[in-house]
Length: 87
Image 1: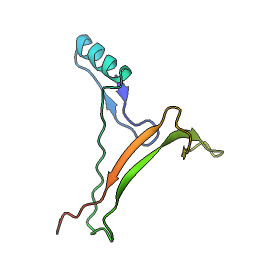
Image 2 (image 1 turned 90 degrees about the vertical axis):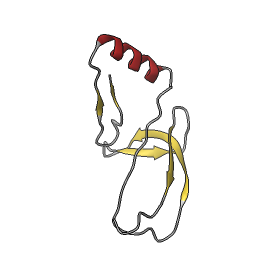
Image 3 (image 1 turned 180 degrees about the horizontal axis):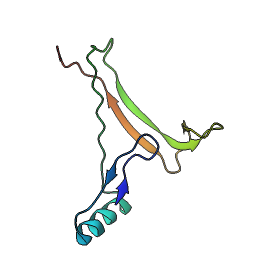
Image 4 (image 1 turned 120 degrees about the vertical axis):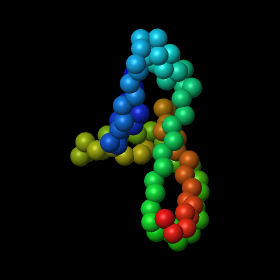
């Protein structure tokens, strides 16, 4: 159906049935899908931070991806830090 994050390592979304594939494909085309990413660390954040990162992903000279300040088809990420105690 969809590769959720092709710019980084990515994850594939597969459907079990044709009907599910059509429904999920339409949801992605219509922009009705929200993706969540979680990063865990065993260290406590030095400062609590939160905010947004917005911009277009473009190819750099070395064929990797970089965030550009233009917003024609932006990647939008909301981030925040939080402590999880002694995990």
